Image (cartoon, rainbow, N blue to C red):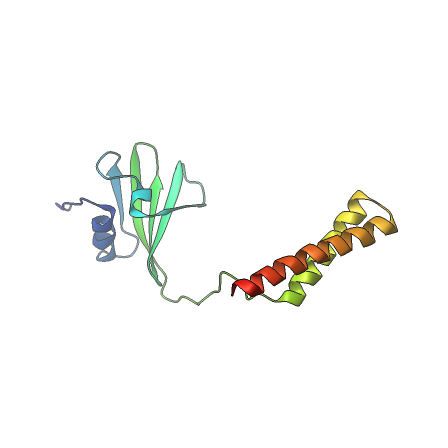
Amino acid sequence: MYNIQLNSWQDVANFLSQQARGTRICVNKGFLPHPQVFLMAPVIYPPQGQLATYYKMLSPTVGFLVRDFGSYYDARVDIRPYVEQVSIVPAADPQRTIAAGTALGAALGSALGRSDKSVVAAALFGGAIAALLASAASNKS
């Protein structure tokens, strides 16, 4: 049993970072502020009885996970020894955007209109909207 003083989520994260992998701390609600005060984001996590789950990246290989079980929080550090850089926002490709808009328009026209003219009209409309979006995206960067 440890005799430690944890006054913030940062203290909890620092303490857990120094412990063996898999170490968890249970904190009664009311002793620390809500995890979102520590800028933790709500995430989808496998259900284990928790009401909500919050996560914050502390570094590229270390994350901090807090699960809200109603009367207490369960906190642990998530260490990933290898992290591959992933681009969250794909590079804008105007031709792909226009092709995708045209295909989506054609699919919607086929589903809703069920005639050749509705497919062509919806494809043109989808392509035009996609072209406007692609133009706006290229002007922004």
